Amino acid sequence: MTDMLGQADRELFLLINSFHSPFWDSVMAAVSGRLTWIPLYLFIILFLAKERGRESVILILLVIIAVAIADLASVHLFKNIFMRLRPCHEPDLEGLIHLVTGRCGGKYGFVSSHAANSFAIAVLSALFLRRRWFSIIIIAWASIVSYSRVYLGVHYPGDIIGGAILGILVAFLIYHVTTHLHSTTWWYRTFKKKL
Image (tube, rainbow, N blue to C red; front, side, top):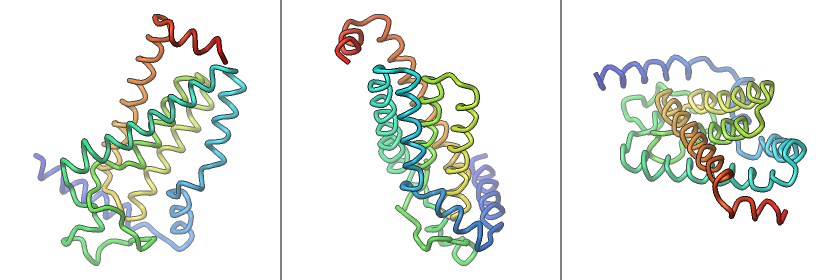
């Protein structure tokens, strides 16, 4: 069963990675870049501040914590344990991959840290803001960033799905823990009063 899933993952990767052009190469390289999205992060911070006032400081800290947890978990609980080679490090795929940027990244790819981090940001901020239009846009953004990793040749689709699930789980965990703490503990209310 795992061999069959691995083969399907590899074939889907090769299919997605084969659809490339110079235009989309440059677009996907930019989409995958972390600095590209600084304006979006600033927008999220400003929108949180506008919608939630002083409480937004706590919410922004929680989003940062979610990204840190998703990023560390993707490396230490998945990549370093499963040790699944990235497609661009896989000897059997040599010569078959269109590696857009010429950089493959670390040796192992399961799960994708880009997908985990993007979905942690998207889902947690969507849970806090509860605006349908924002949720659609931010989930679409996380999906496009994640897709770009397959297009660029550095992750299998399974790496992306695993990373997305990890990011979503981290976001829900933090959201539920903090909303529970919000209503039951003195430290949250005290901190909120000081802001």
